[in-house]
Picture 1 (cartoon, rainbow, N blue to C red):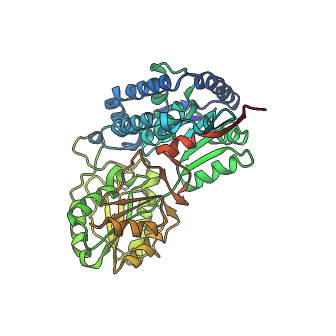
Picture 2: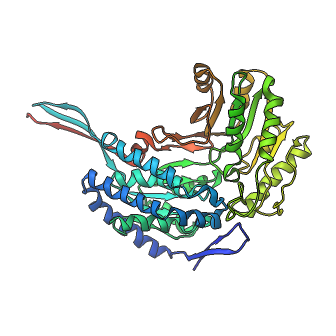
Picture 3: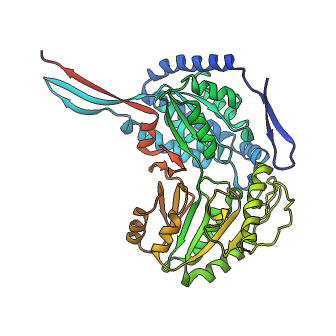
Length: 458
């Protein structure tokens, strides 16, 4: 039997353990969920929405406890609270959108024919969730999936081992059957076997590129519907008409928040020549104000990375860049222990031969380059294997839209970054993955189309 362990980044201790299910027991859970889904799909949409939102509210009731739990499991400072604000915003929006998003499209309703297109639930949705925003990312799929009439199994990252239990319990308290929405503790081989069995009707995976490849390979030949949000190397571009103070404050927060462990975190910034020196000066000054320390301390503004192995990647990327001529601007902060606690860093004199400007660092490090034109900035932003978000800083919306149309990204921001708008599809391209969540398209992901062509007159 495999024991799953959450190692706390605070001190390297074991924070929680759970025993993984044997394969046969996991298969029983799958069959129970499929059976429960049939009854749930028959519940009127209004009632499903009410129960799902009650489950979301139950999470809100324990948000303070969740914030402390997350600090222990993945290192986010308690001063930033849990994730309930974002979860509620997205859940409320998707609930309000559901009646129109799931409504049949009537092509014809005459004496001769009834022709309509409907959305039916996929069936059993498998959510393989990440540790960096463990509630937000998973609930992006769980909420619309349940509202649309699906059953859900949640497999959470070992680093945030207790999150799936919290989510399932909140929905059970709201009256949803235990079999309908369940947390499942399984190891990777068991998950891959279930995927290979075609056990699921839809799979949502958020994680690394290699993790996505393993999921896709495991399910090969089953024709299971899937969506992936994988790596990112998100860029900001500061133009000559940008609000410099706002650009610095927002982009540096986008680079450093959550110790840089954000799917859409800013990892590289391109600044027009006229603003470059001032931008770097202000960015360095702001970054030096961060306090690195225990996430349980209210004074801490940047906590440890979720795991020491992630911190090793950050240090390796920085060391390689420095060896190739980059300049580091932030001295080692008190609290940097050479382990999970990593000082934030601003790098200049960087270029695209350096790993830190090309591969996902996923830590509190950002490289800043000077550019002479939109053309140069566009070429550099597109010079990446990833394509999640881009952040454009200008007072000209038309210019931002024109540049955005040429960028190889799923999402384009102007004068903001690191934000998820539930009305818009959260999606990427290239090695960031495929598919998307939220918006009307988020409901399309967890449902399948079904056409009715009914000839009334013979």
